[in-house]
Image 1 (cartoon, rainbow, N blue to C red):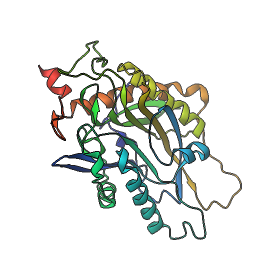
Image 2: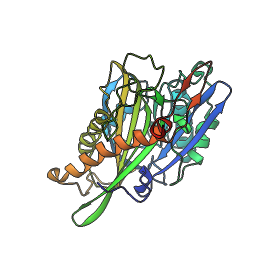
Image 3: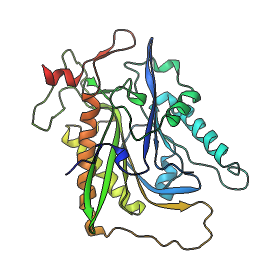
Image 4: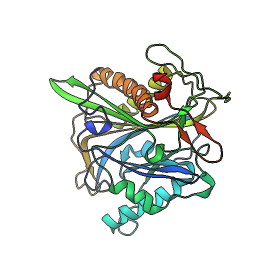
Length: 327
C-alpha cells in the first residue's frame, strides 16, 4: 500500500507526538506522548478499542477503553515502573483542564502503556518524574524523532537496539482518501527470529537470549469513521505485522494494540439520548486490515534501523540493525 506523505502516525490529521528522553549515567529511558487531537479529550472523546495479543504487561486504562470504547486522555508510553508517574500526570492534566472531574462529573481514565527497558536502563531507580511526562506532552508535534528517543530510549528488539517507530498508509474509500498510521514501542523478539522483508534473518553477535520475551505496544490511528468493535478488529491485525517479523508472542511478552479513530468526537456532556454518525460498511474494512499489518511491520523495522548501537547500565550493550544492514 502507499505510505502517507510523512510515513508516520501524524499523517492522520490532528495527531501529534512528543518525546522526553533521559540518557545519562545508567539511565536510558523516557516518555513518549501521543495526542489524538489538539482539543480537550475529556470533553471530546474519540472512539477507541484495545486488543491484548499477549497480556504480560502492566498498562493502565485499558479496561475502561475495552468496556466503553472511548479514549479521553492523551496516550503515554514509558517503562514499566514509570506507569504510575504517567497516570498521575494525565490525571492532573485532565483536572487542570476540567475542574469538574471527580466533583460534579465522573473521574478520568488515563491511558499509559509500557515496556521493560531494564536491560539497558537502571529501571529500579524510577528516575522519571511527572515533569518528564509533562515535557513529552508539551513537545507534541507532527514532526517527531524515531529510534532511541522518548520511551524507546532503552528498548531492545530481536537482540538489536529497539525503540520508537512509525509508518502510515493511505487508501481510498467512497472516492475519498483516508489514512491509517501506526506508532510502536518495540521491545520484543528473540535474537535470530527476525525476518526482513527480503527474507534475510539477522542475528546479533553474542546474543544468548533463548526465550521470546519483552513487549511491544502498537498504537493505530485512522480518520475512517468506525465503531469500537471495528477498531478492535483492526487492532487485532497488528499481530499479523508482528508475525511477519518472526514474533510468536511468547509467554513473557506483553503485546498490546490500541486503535482509535479521529472521525468523530463524542461529547462528554452530550444532551441527546441518541448520536448519529457514519460507520464504515463491514465489507469495506479489508483496506484497514492490510494497512494495520503493513504499518506495524514497517514501524518496528523503522524503530530498529533508526536506533544506533547503545551501551547502557553496567556492561549492557545492544548493536544496531542499521549497522548490520550496512556490513
